[in-house]
Each structure stands twice: as structure tokens, then as C-alpha cells.
Image 1 (cartoon, one colour):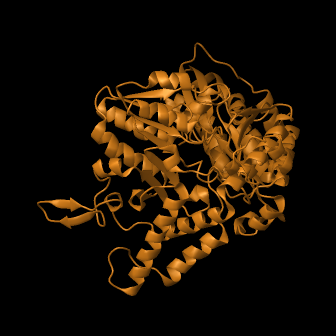
Image 2 (cartoon, rainbow over the protein chains, first blue to last red):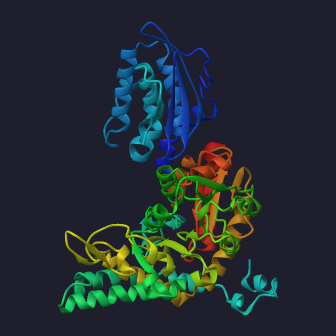
Length: 150
Length: 428
């Protein structure tokens, strides 16, 4: 099964089993729920700011391997970033997962996020991959409400 | 599970139940009638186990639609010309076929709708709005599809009425004692599913109806998952309304049936206004048509209805009892197969069950299960199956669901088991 081997990269499976920053954050500045009613993915993303910088970010909840590992990788990458940097990274990520599957990937530019390139082959999984990111952006904007992909 | 054993195990069966199940060689032949079952992906035929979402269509139905559009197409009930007569006759003939298939007493009690959802909304918006008032109650169950929850919620919100919910036990069966307690003088309607789409439970609808009728309460059954798999006779059930969809019973999408007892339908206001549902219109007064046209405003899905008639003929030629028996054996086989795999939990283990195998796996989310299955060429559904309260009841965010039809085989279920092992390989 060549296609899914590409989708479920080892890094994704590993983050799915052992998600990083997978914990509630009682002293979070922002807390946003992420919900994908289609498949029942349900996460909460927590953010603690220090001025314009993300001091700490975590998440908890349940979802598929793609949504969970994407949230996990996201928390690793965003710690210490400014709001602007976080938004710029999301744009890159979003462009990659929604691109034509044949399009070349600039691995040096996208970095660790390139493990999610397989999502391009499965349009229904784009929502899974971007779910936590949407909540994160809402949190950074201070829209502390739930975010749904539907 | 040999057919002869199943029969021998139950010697006290009534004559009607002694029907033989479809044989594997018959099923092999019937599969040839379904072009979509032979769609190849990576050189292999798909294993289609998503029948609760929609069924595949036999050539007879596909060709009937084609024939209608090629040589019979015209509007119905209006034209004075040849084609209109042909189209009207075919459309009304389809109504009679459905009447016979569901054991409906009167032809005028067969209302064509867009599907089960529209049938239920029709009853909520007409019977419901007319008869339900503040503090009245409507009883549904905890295993309903959203289409048999939301229309009643909307009605209750509008009228200040209350929705009461019959609970489900750990096997996925309705708790009938609780149901009996919920019935009271304020109950205006009971709306429950005949067969659960998420759990496969076949509800004891006769008992449910008898209990409601004892208190003078009418009952609507959501038959979307029953009509493709079980013999259904609305007279024997004595239900007051019955809604189903053609596309789940090997017919076209966009068409369905609502049965209602004439005594109810006659007293209900129309659902939508438009052409075909009127006798005469002036700006001062409009007189509505009689049954069933009062509920069929606008040009109906003529081709769809005719296609449904063909699907019903197809099913009757096979025999619903034989289908039910075969699917029962297949369900048992699939249940044993899945239960024997470590880390698989089957959701819905009712004693009376139709061919739905809803399950979760310890190591993988249902969405990931569906993805791996797709790569193995096995089509299933992953998600909440439009039955979120059922998911909540069983404490799962979603399930993977394999749902059977008479054209499925033990080989299909073997492929399902192989795919489950593949999931374990990737995620364990």
C-alpha cells in the first residue's frame, strides 16, 4: 500500500503514539476548542503568551493520527515564535497540504512539516491536518471560542 | 455457519421463517447485476461494505432510468399527449409497486418524497405543527439518526414542547421499561427507528407501537435501514407513519416514500404549496388535491419513482425473507471474525441485529481505519454516522462501520479482517 505508507510517515505514527505537549494548561491565556464534526476529532489548544511571543502551547483531546500528530508537531514548532511567525508558518503549511500532489516540496523551507506532504493525496484529510492550526490562529487572535472545520 | 445448521438449530420455526437463505452461488450471480461492484482499483474489485450509507444499483434500475429518459419522458398528471400518458402510467405504477412491497393498504397512502429525511420533516411540519402544543411531548430514542432527532427538536422549539428520549442499554437495545414510563397523556407522537444505522439493532417495533397505541399515541418509524434488509409490512406493524429512502434499497437517489394512514394524512395540512397539490386556485381561495397529491407539490422525481419501482420488483423477485436470512448469517460470520481479533471492540451487540458491524480499535482512530481500509480496497464508513448521541452513549468519538447488503459475501468479510490486521500492523 504505497499511498498510505506515504501518508502515515513514521514521524506521524510516532507523534500519534506519543504526542508532545499533550496536556491541559490551567494558566493559559487562551484556550480554543477545535472540533471536526465529520470524524469526531475534538481537541483543545492552550496558549500562554509573553508579550507578542508564544511562551507555551499545549493541547489535549482525541482525534485521528493525522490531526493528533499535526497538533503535536505544531506545538513543538510554535513555542517561542511571535504571532507573525506563527501565522507565516501556517500559511506555508496550508499551501503545502492543499497543493497539487505533483508539486515539488521545498523541504529546507517547510522543515519538519514536510512529513505531512502525503495529505495532498487525500483532500478529506486536509481538515485533519489543519484543525489544530486553525484553533491556534484563533487563540492568537484572542477568539477564545470553538473552531469547527465544518 | 452452514445454512442447513441454522435451520436445524431452530426446528420450531413457523412456515414463513423456514425460507432458505440465498446460496453463495446465487449471490455470485446476483453480483453480476451490479456494475459498480466490479469497479477495479489497482487491478482488484472493490469490496463495498458501505451499504448503510447507500447501496449500489442493479442494471435493471439503471436501464429503467435510461429507458424512461429515452422514450417515456414527459410531465405527469397534466399532458393530454401520448408521452405524458406513458409517464403518468409508469409513475403511478411505481406507487402501486411500493404499496405492494410495504404492505400498504391504500395506493393513496403512498407519498413520494425526496427520501426518509423529507418524509420525517413532512410529518413534523404538518401533523406535528397542527397537533403539538406547549408542554406536549414527543418520544424518540437515543439511537436515532439526526434526521429523526432534529425535525422534532425544531418542532419542540417552535411549540414549547418537550423531547423525551428512550435510553439504550450497553448492547444497543432500547430500554422498553423506560419507554413505557415515558408514555403519558402529554405524548403526541413516538418517532423511532426500525433498524439503527449506527448499531444495527432491529427494534421491537411491534411492541413499541402496541404500547403507544394503548395510550392513543401514533407512531412514526424511520425505515431507512430496514426496507433494504427485512420484509416490512406496515399493516402487520400497525405503524401510523413509515418513511424510507430508495437509494438505500438499490434504487436511485433523490426519491423516497412516506406511508401514512389515510385517516392521518387526510387531516394533515399540505407540506409545500405549488403545482399538482391543488384542485383549483384563485387569489381568494385554493382547494387542495386529495391524497397523495396534496403532499406532492411540484413536478416530482418521476424517473426516480419509476427507478424505485424497478428496485422493488428486483428485491421481490429475490425475496426479502431470503435476503434477511442470508444477511443474518453473514452478520454472524462477520461478528465472529471481528470479535476474534485482539483490540477490536464491536459497538452494538443487540440480539436482533441487521448487517451493521460498527467497531473501534484500540490503536487507531476510525478515520485512520477507514484510510487504511481504502488502500486495501475495502469501502467502509468512519465517523459518527449522523448519530452523535449514539457515539456519546458508547463513549466513542466515532466508529468504523462495515454495513452489508445481500450482494456481500464471506470473502468480503475476510477482506475486512485482512484490512483490520493491516491497521494493526501500521498503528500497533
